[in-house]
Image (cartoon, rainbow, N blue to C red; front, side, top):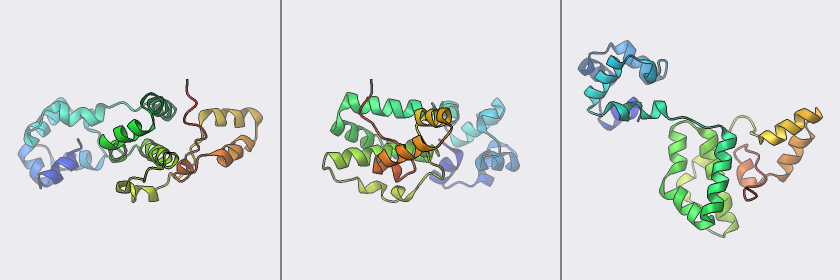
Length: 189
């Protein structure tokens, strides 16, 4: 959990937290703004913050220590999960666990939008109404087009963009909405 979220939940200011934790306000401000990473702070600083926020150190550090896999591995895992669960159970699982929002809050935008695109695609092919909860998120778009690594490798090997153009033409519309090129989500081994 991020310190800013905890402060908002508790209706607490950075200044108050700095005072109660005996951490200089500038240090706390640097942590909250992202200028200083919490996992790089001294054990004493982390301890004082956790104590002042009345939470275990592990809870404070957990988001900092979570490892992010490559986007290709993430996509593969999602496709395998879809295959294992089946369409409807996959939809239920993703939506009940609030995964799309969770990734978005971590600022893992490609993962969040990929999962939303998958949910929208699976909903469409099964005639299920889309989840309106994510309507505002559907207005988002990645600034750069994300191609599968295989398409990038082929384009590099051929020394032209024809594979990229072909992949865009064959892409699933729900994914292209977010600038993610995805042509096949079911053919996994």
